[in-house]
Length: 301
Length: 286
Ligand SMILES: Nc1ncnc2c1ncn2[C@@H]1O[C@H](COP(=O)(O)OP(=O)(O)O)[C@@H](O)[C@H]1O
Ligand SMILES: [Mg+2]
Image 1 (cartoon, rainbow over the protein chains, first blue to last red):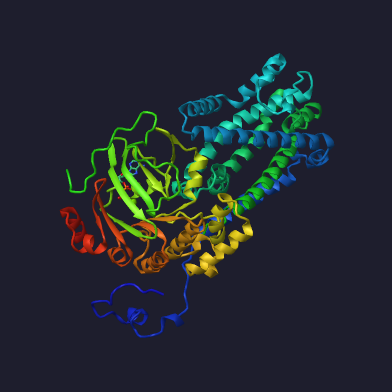
Image 2 (cartoon, rainbow over the protein chains, first blue to last red):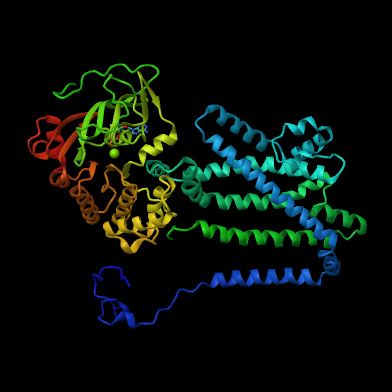
């Protein structure tokens, strides 16, 4: 324990003298009285009361119609819709980040042409509101065939059929992925730039092949700064899939709207969607925690 | 500004061969009988308008230790980096163990090597950085076996055994499972040396290997380097440790403003420098 202050110049009065560190007693024997924080307790009390009121309202206010909520929460229509939402999120993320990684390395490349193209892409897709872009793709799906051959995606996406759901799904996935790629590119680029240049230099000096340098040395370190941002993006994409409801795709939010359009129970059905979104976001957050821990290897404190 | 050992004006490089100079550039033949490990001929290098190397000529014989001294900014790091082609030279050429660095000669032309071939060349040249540049997400052992496995295709088992022997040699046998950040600076630099040695290089380059260390850790790193020197490893060491230079150097080279001002045995350069600039520098660091 470190003790402060010089000895008092003037002879101290009796009161203080007994408590002065220099009275020869063993200070480590004394009882420590911690500082009290009365206002903190007031804040806690107020918050607790408000929280209790809120929870009470949730339970007792009949407007929530928890019985309706319970009835619909796990019906087949809703479960199917949750599955569609998860699929949109998954494909949007995977394709978005795959393209994003390519764009990031284009922006980091030595070729001014590749840099300009990547920059142009990011500029364009960050400028267009997602909903506008989705409607655009959705309507293009009606024109299409020639166009589709021009899009270098997997065969699954080349089989648009404008009249069935797969066509709309593909358009939605395409829209989400292209939008996501612009943001993913910047996140990945930021992560790569955050890696000390000495790392690549050391890898190059050791003669490690180029791809292996990226995969083994740069990316694992870049992941540390990529992950928190990427998790944000994935979660925001997950909720963003609700925008796809404008394309009449049976994802969670659309399906909930369909149901309350039929039975008029708006609030409990919105609650069904809300709780599903919260649950699945929680799962994603837990996953994020473990993935981040994996990539924190070697980082000391 | 001219000094007695200034090189003759460099010849113009042909348009198609940025690093070419005199017709004396070696063919890709095995090392000649003269046992010269490193040969540097009229090397020039600029960063934009700043000419950092202004005609460097230097020979390093196999098994010898060359210590490079010089004020900050004189081009020491740049020179080391050109030797393993981390920097491309603008003019002149460098050969290591009889092989041109970064280029292949064919007739009157020098062809720039592909990245893969350059990487291959670098596996024969170990480089130790001022800031260690260990891979922080890999353990000490993984740091050391990465290059032998990935660049030379050694079987992992073999690489691990070799790495453990190297760790013992630098006095860190018990640290193979540690992550770099769990080690002191001196230990990290010793790992970095072991990592460079894992490729069994013909030549070791050290760029101020002790400059980032706390004073009490300098000795343990210098001891490892001295050991290597006594075992006949060919090394070029940039350092400000004059005592080290006096003890292990076969040749001391003093650089200033992109030129080699003076070179010779330590007894000459350190104790009886001919050049005024060498004297001025030594009086500051001694
Ligand atoms: N990549 C680079 N781009 C621009 N200037 C550089 C670069 N590397 C080094 N320099 C400059 O070259 C000069 C010599 O640098 P360096 O070789 O590191 O000197 P030393 O190692 O002797 O201190 C310095 O002025 C430095 O700023
Ligand atoms: Mg330097």
